[in-house]
Image (cartoon, rainbow, N blue to C red; front, side):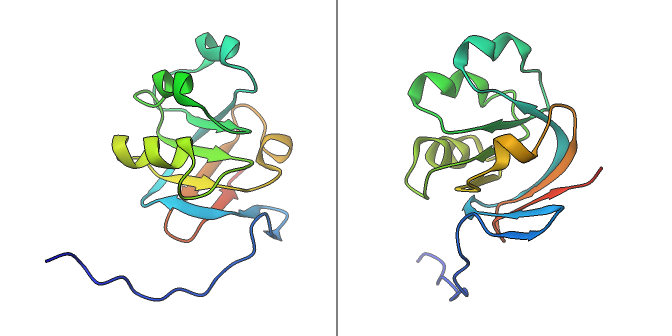
Length: 125
């Protein structure tokens, strides 16, 4: 028999808990810390390296080629049923969706922590 889900307190999508913490939807469980790589177009895929955290506006199926390299995924839009969320769960990596402004607040090479349980992205440096 499956696990019983515990009730959680809803959080507003895209809330900024502080200048260092973005709030979104925890779309794939887990916690990961790593260097961010902001990818705004799939033509930039060659810039994405193993172990980086993918930060993007959204993903569609062709973007899935990046997921085997990703430590985690952060998107500006989406839900638990979005492509990024489903692919992250399939690859077993944390995902926070619907941050609204992750691609504008997070810069390449920033150290960030993605908490797919709480739905937060913390800028560590």
